[in-house]
Length: 166
Image (tube, rainbow, N blue to C red; front, side):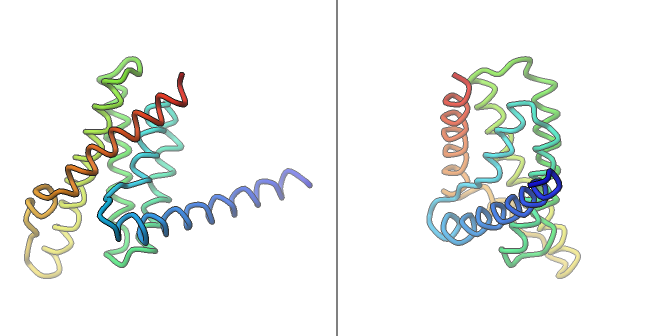
């Protein structure tokens, strides 16, 4: 098989993988009591392994696919994940010189808090422009799902990063 067809099949396979992962994220994980963002964990992993271009591409594609499957305002997840990838890349390059367990925890905490804050700002701005109302910040931060996602993201990121970099 020629190289051109291999690249085409790789792109098609990646698109199907993103759709399946977005479907699993929306249908099973978000529908249950587990509020874990698989794409956020994947972006954190890419930032920690210094694959910044892949993290940005993943953030954009993941946001698009999440918005296609999730019935909210189109583009909010993509914008939040793109800004989040930029924040994580900048924070990692400025604050951490090498990867340690503290940097995994810190990037996980920054990632989850920034993701919730960006979602609140973007969805609040859209809601304000449409209905002249702004959603409460407590709706995003004062609940069990925020604390659970914070803990789960840190634990899963630590496990994944430790196993792949032994």
